[in-house]
Amino acid sequence: MTRHHAHEARQQVSDVAGPTLRIDPSVCDGVGICAHLAPDLIALDSWGYPIIDDHVLVRKRQQRQANAAVSACPKKALFISG
Amino acid sequence: MSGQNVVVDRSLLGSAIAHVPRADSGHVSGISRMDLTEHRSHFGRRHPSHSTSGAALIDELAAVGLTGRGGGHFPAAAKWRSVAAAGPGGLVVVNGAEGEPGSAKDAVLWQTRPHLILDGVVCAMETIGAREGIVWLHQGADSTIRSVRSAIAERAAAGETDGSLRVVLAPDRYLSGEATSIIRTIEGGPTLPRFVLNPAQPWSDGGRPVLVNNTETMARAGLVALRGAAQYVPTSLLTVISRGHRSVVEVTADQTFGMVVAAHWSDFTAGVPQAILLGGYGGSWVSWTDIREMRIDPAALKPAGLSLGAGLVGPLPSTACGIEESTRLVNYLAGQSARQCGPCVFGLADVAKLCDDLTAGALTSTGRKRLVRFMDEIAGRGACRHPDGAIRMVTSALHVFGADVAKHRRGRTCNAKVFGVMPLPGEQS
Image 1 (cartoon, rainbow over the protein chains, first blue to last red):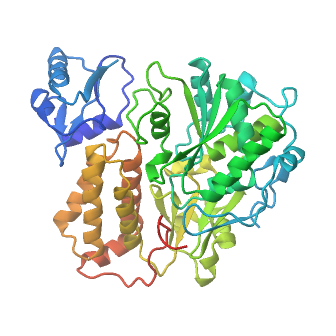
Image 2 (cartoon, rainbow over the protein chains, first blue to last red; image 1 turned 90 degrees about the vertical axis):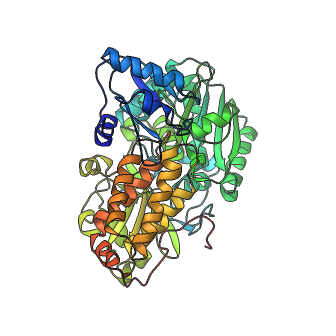
Image 3 (cartoon, rainbow over the protein chains, first blue to last red; image 1 turned 180 degrees about the vertical axis):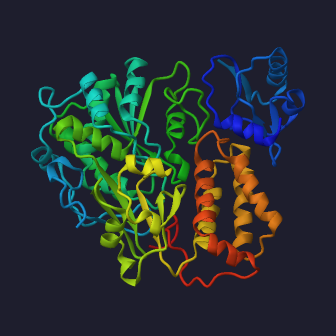
């Protein structure tokens, strides 16, 4: 996922209900492990903090990656909502 | 000239002009304080049979289109409904810890119309079934704190049973005024913003429902409750920043920025400004040509991508440099980060550093690209809107002061003669 893509994703409000990957940015320490585990959903910004694609997780592969990132985050900053 | 057509007993300040020193937490002059007796004879009594409360009051707030006046302009009726739906036993907070260092309208309202605001709080408590009302103020705002404490004492002495109203003092920081900072403090945490999944119900799971409204919003709710929606005049409170002082004025939606600046900006005699900073330090620069004819009407500003924000109008003299001024402001905003979210802590610091380079005439073309990319990366990624405001201000500066950008880029600086136009906390008044 490109940075541009991630930015576009942030700008859109999805009107389709379903699970999305979310982050509490005040808890995140920029460890960065999430971007390796969920490359389709997460890119790191210039300071090493994750930019999240918050579209609805429709595909199995996306859901697998999101789950892996959520459980690996040492700060518990990531979660799936909806 | 300003506010001539505002009917006094249906407006907050009428045609009076309040003066406040340039530095923060100032003492208000120009408008006298209404004590409880004067307030009651001027605005009428707050009595169950005379004033509106409950669902009817929420309908009236919706009918007059009341929005939050702290910056976000979220519809007040929707917020009240959302808190009421969470059930009784909650808390009403009136936020008087004005985050915007330039804005003085909260101080003016607290020091001249304290009972109008407190009537708004009491009606909100009745409406959402709250047990407690909190007045949230900056700890350094001495004149404001005195006026609020006297007002609460006057009500107690008059035997008004207002439930429990109390003052809570917040640290003198920019982000103490964030609604989530307030709720977090009330819930026993630090006075720092936090991330909320559902902005309509920003309190913790299982916590007490909390309604937070800005001071002006609560004063307007008080006005609607006392005078009724049919009598309501949709005005705006603006803080106009001059070199020597600040003026707070109430204006109707048919007035233009040109009229207000000509009437209330004391530096106008030296010529028209080149631009104004609109809304707050996290607001937008707009060129004088573009803003002059615009009406001071949130609905008219919206299509132009502009907002009254916290009501700040900061004219920039033609002898000042918009890039220098914006660099000064973004450095202040970066320094006010709550230091929780990476994109805000590191991103804003880098943006401020690149703006320093630009001001010093040392920004390379790579640096210019980095500045734009950094701002693109930061947008929308904080737990609160603080970084977004800083980015909005810098982005508008690069656009409005394009000629100054070009001058600074050629390894030179501009020939500005005036510096430090917008007041920052800690500087001398």
